Length: 287
Ligand code: NDP
Figure 1 (cartoon, rainbow, N blue to C red):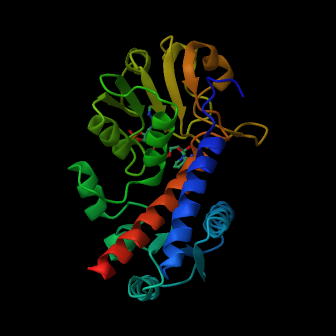
Figure 2: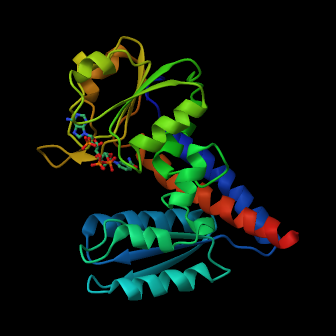
């Protein structure tokens, strides 16, 4: 890979090795970090994501627990599974794979997870703490992007970061994390008028919209760093991003590919959050 391609697989691997070493240290102290994943229904993409999360957690030495529930599960039954895991000392991270079936209120489910075990960083307590710069679990995808920027020595301070997409799990927290690192942040979304006039100002352009190859050459300033969060399928069923990689890459200083950019970092940061939770539990029991 050329130097300007940001290699999320390699950076993710490097961080997972660090996590593995810290998991070993915790095990020597009698604590095996445990990640529980709750999977509801038969969504094939969700099954694949969950398999990857389980595989990755066991590879770094964590305990992985799967709670596989039928699509017909009631909200109360799901809440009682969460409650059980909240009270299980061998579990340090709880993740409910989204989306959930329509009859289940996602917000109610997220609220039920103990914020100390909310390794996805979706609970309003963790979102609020992140907003005011307190230690919390950070949403895994934006956290992973920060790590990609840091580990490639990409300057953030004083740079203009433009985020396209304002979802609660990617766009919004992404802007906050960059703001905390002294970037000047602009948010764009589906109602932004004249999108290229904003994106062309970006030193760091982060795109999370879910539109195949939407961002082209006309959106990108010469020398920009481009981070593509999108995970879409093109007309041939091939995985691709929100950015037209081939059209844009020669204008950039650095760019993430899809696959192999942001995706591997999201799971890595899930492991990092689970480790953080286990380390905090051990520190708490030492008091
Ligand atoms: P959402 O659908 O929740 O949000 C999409 C955002 O993009 C919205 O804010 C929407 O604006 C905005 N948007 C949509 N169309 C346009 C447009 N034409 N111009 C400008 N803005 C637009 O998506 P997510 O944030 O959950 O995910 C975005 C993409 O990232 C998806 O492809 C998803 O699969 C991928 N993803 C990848 C991850 C990874 O690990 N690599 C993790 C999470 C997501 P508005 O608010 O106005 O509707």
